[in-house]
Length: 153
Image (cartoon, rainbow, N blue to C red; front, side, top):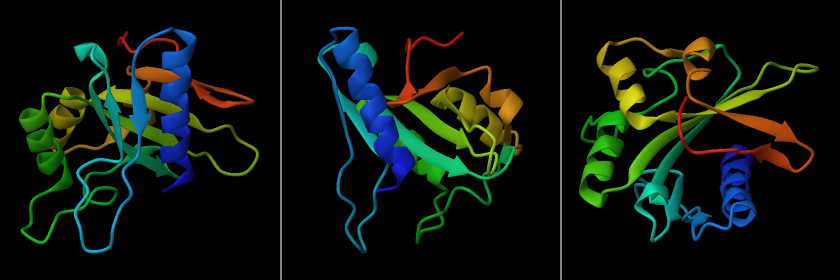
């Protein structure tokens, strides 16, 4: 599990505890030769928090669908596979993206609603850091990333 995925799990569970919301974020163990639809799942009786989150941590100012996502052995792009998973499960999807700026510069992280990701994918353009800023910002603290609200601006 990557550090960013672990941080997203902790961030979400901290959010639920702080706001007294029944919900639990977790990461399924990935096994060799088995596909994994998304990085983080969130279970909650509240449908607003029944989530599926794909995590990307990049050293760049733009996320590219050809570079930062993959296709499976049947040539199904990861965005399409996740979209299908969301449709089948009824989960709300997000892309958690961390833009790492290099040594001495603070990283920025955001939750982008999955429908926004799909629009960028279908238009064949990546997601810039400015695009991501219209999503839900995760603020950095000594404990890791903090989430104030799950509603987009």
